[in-house]
Image 1: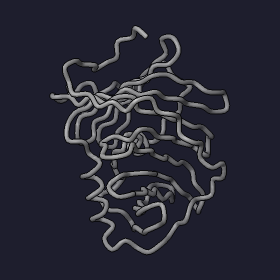
Image 2 (image 1 turned 60 degrees about the horizontal axis):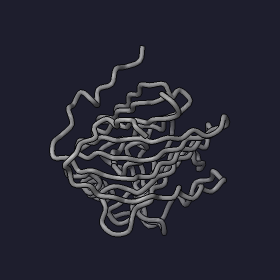
Image 3 (image 1 turned 135 degrees about the vertical axis):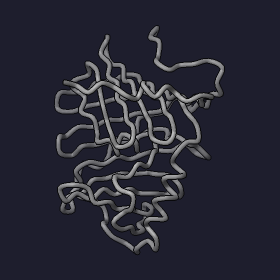
Image 4 (image 1 turned 45 degrees about the horizontal axis):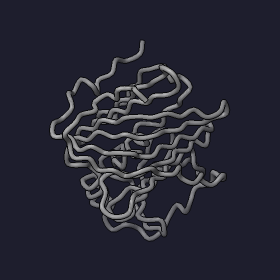
Length: 238
């Protein structure tokens, strides 16, 4: 397309994932899935293991496609991501014409800058989870239980909301915010067959707005050196 993607470098080992179809739409209903099951013996240990397993060992450059839609209709484009372990992630989204947005996460902070004003960003924890990264809102889950979908780690977040992370094996497969038994927002991840450090795609639905965002990973380049810290320090909007 002739656009130079930020952070792109040559001479690095590249892991190709090929072209990926968009994920199937989530169910239209907003009722939360089963809220209980056999309790986990040690939810804190399970959360620690997931946090360690979800963190790639080195910096990486990501290329992906994205799509966003709400009542006003869809918008879509390409994107690049830059990652420094353990929790620095920058996403640059390119839309139609010169429209673009930079999103930076570091710790639990989220900053954005750009001209894609019609895009409503998910909370930071959901953006991290889009890349398969488990960055919980607190150090210890309130509880945990087992379901047919996987192990569920539950965290209490403000305003009486439960944030549920669903884990299958050593992979994060779903994140959901639930209030009084009703789902507010949900993210579902897809993973390629075999060992992989990055999910192949994700779909996020905000059932309050409502809006939907999807992305599919095209390529991952493992970098030899960490990115400069300043690229994750976007200015705060005035």
